[in-house]
Amino acid sequence: MQKNVLEAYPSLDIKAYAVWFNMVFLDDRSRCPGDALPDHRVTHYWDEEKLVGRWYSNRFGRPGQTAWDLYFLYAAGADSLASQDSILAWGAPVISRGPDLRKAVAALAEARAGR
Image 1 (tube, rainbow, N blue to C red):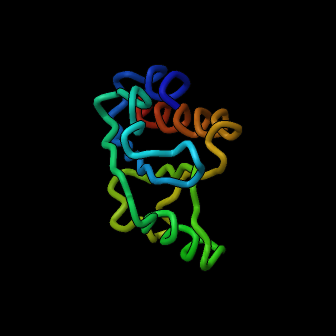
Image 2 (image 1 turned 30 degrees about the horizontal axis):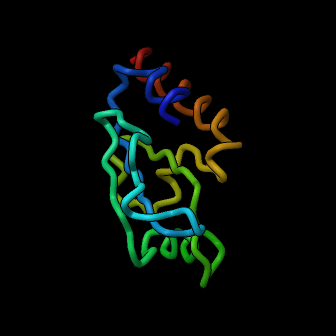
Image 3 (image 1 turned 120 degrees about the horizontal axis):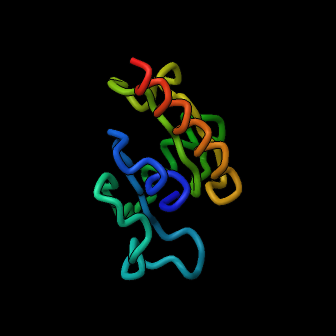
C-alpha cells in the first residue's frame, strides 16, 4: 500500500486509516505500526479488542468472526462507514489485492483531475 498507492499518488487528497490488532502470533502492539505506512495521510490506531475487525465482519457477512488484512476505499464525504453505497472498492487480503486497490485509487485520481 505504501509504495504502490500512497507513494504513487503523493499529492492526492486522501485520508487513510490503519487499524492494527493482534491476529497472529507475531502481531504485537510494540511492533505496530513500526515503519509500515509512514505517509502523513495515514492515521494509525491500535485496537486491542478487535472491535473494528468484528464490526466489519458483522456488517459485511461473517458474523462472529474478525475481519483483518483488508481495505475499503470510500467516496469523499461518506457520511457513514456502514453505508455500502459509499464504498468505491474493497478487498482482502491487502497483499494479494493490492493491484485492485491501486486501480481504484488511479480511477479516483483521474476522476478528481478531470473535474
